Amino acid sequence: MALTGTNRKLPPGPGGPALVQSLRYYRDPYGFLHACQRKYGDWFTVKQIPCGTIVYVADPEAVRLIFADPGTHIAGAINDYMAPVLGQGLLLLDGEAHARERRWLAPALASERIRGVAAEIEALTESEIAMWKVGVPFALRPRFELLTLRIILRVLFGAAAAARLAELMSKVIQLKGKDITRSVMAALPFGLATWKLSGDAAHNAEAIDRMLYAELAARREGTVANEGMLAGMLAGSQATDKNLRDQLMTLIFAGHETVAATLAWTFERVLRHPTVYGKLRTADEHYSEAVLLETMRQRSTIGDVARELTSPLETARQSLPVGTRVCPSIVLVHMRPDLFPEPEAFRPERFLDAKPKPWMYLPFGGGVRHCLGAAFAMMEMLVILRTVLARTALRATDPAPERGVSNGVTIYPHKGAMVVVEARR
Image (tube, rainbow, N blue to C red; front, top):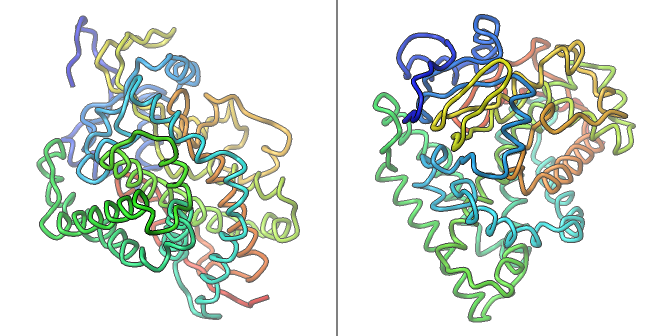
């Protein structure tokens, strides 16, 4: 990171090399961030692989200023470590290129299209639940990852493509699981600035590309039905196949992992709060949504939203120069007692009548980079939550809460949200 135009020091933070700080974060992200805040306050500097030197911010006024920026604070360079998999997808773009891609993709995520797939999501969820065995403990997160991956592929490509894209799903699971993990672990001690996919990972990525390009060619030639969100992306678009491939990979990866982690945390939370669980089983959608919002407040699956300053950031408490990488901390802002009284209490009721300001509550990011798929994600989670509650009675295998761990992208329960199906309905 280059700091230009000033010699002002960054806020204090923990010592030690980047690898040690990163491992502390990955093992216990909530604990690490809260420990830093207790020691250093709402502004602290850490060294973190792959992002380098970053300043965490838990000051709501500073978050408001960062999100109010019209788009000059950039994020693409910070996310560049994802390029070996995502190419130049939406997460890696800034400025007009980012705005242009959002305008192009937004119609495909319009509300009428979103509502049209709710019945399919319910059917896929019921098929998933049918595989859960009564009385046998299992982790919800990997099951939800498979389910949400099936859903995003169905949404992107349409129902008719399911059979021919079965291999694509298998390759994505392998790539995002063992292949990428092994590649990253091998590069971690050296930093990820120049990391690359291992041989197996690169082989699977190439296979995925071949399948995606073949699908695009078949749709352009009219030899297969042009359905799903991809039909909207192709309609009237001058996008190249490479551009379409990059956005599809971004939507596939970003469109299921965070949803799966949030659902896992939702059940991890409600099964340890019997009153909430009881109300939720007979509640309307308004209360169910409040449960999801409270889960995302207390157990953020994305820990922060990173920006690189292209203009100085000046607040009453802190000044940061151009070039500083800042991370408004979703985890810490969501647990501020001045914004959310008794933040350790799991109380969905706090969201029934109150709507926090966007710089106070930011599970989907903020500003010009607010998650484009937020409405779809909420609808998907509500349908899955409602279906699981209607078809099963669940119990946590251990009354003790699960701590969070990070894979470098999402934060999820360290045991995967272990449960037992006590009965089917």
